[in-house]
Image 1 (spheres, helix red, strand yellow):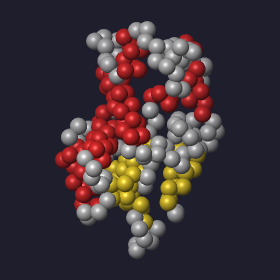
Image 2: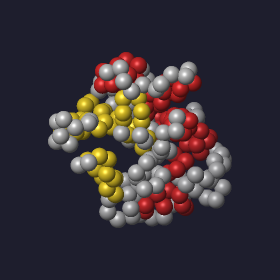
Image 3: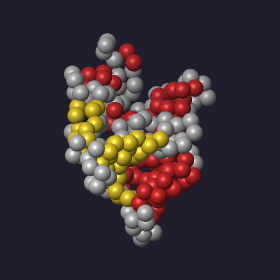
Image 4: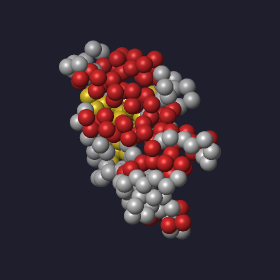
Length: 220
């Protein structure tokens, strides 16, 4: 078995390629995990993908985003935009993606309609950071919400299945234990979180109109 996790230079973010082969002579299975921050796709990720594909379309078993911070999701969104542009230009896409694993904000909170009642709620739904009211790290996450929404939209346009093999959308673990997902012969992913209990609590924090109310969240 050959198993390597290649870490690409991603500045303050992450960009990883998992390489797996059951045998040295077998066909490689590759999974792209995160894509780094702005500029990483063009300067690092795309050149590396071109090396791997050797002038042929590259098969990616999966592309996944660990979370929507801009230093993780931006390069993935840039990749999908580039593929969409190739399709619009009538060209063959330089890589074929079997599935995108990505839990969007909408899916995590139950897909209820957005009802904006304050600047902070508007920020959490639309990604527009208010001048006051959010600390630095929260503001950074909020600003990435539209990127996550755009990524799912572009994946749908490219007919890339969302969260394929995970047993549902979003990717989640059961209330107790973990979820085991076969990725290739001899390779599995273990989903630890979010679990069903955590998602239920998050959905309960939104009233029927889609307004976030922390007081509705059940105790742990």
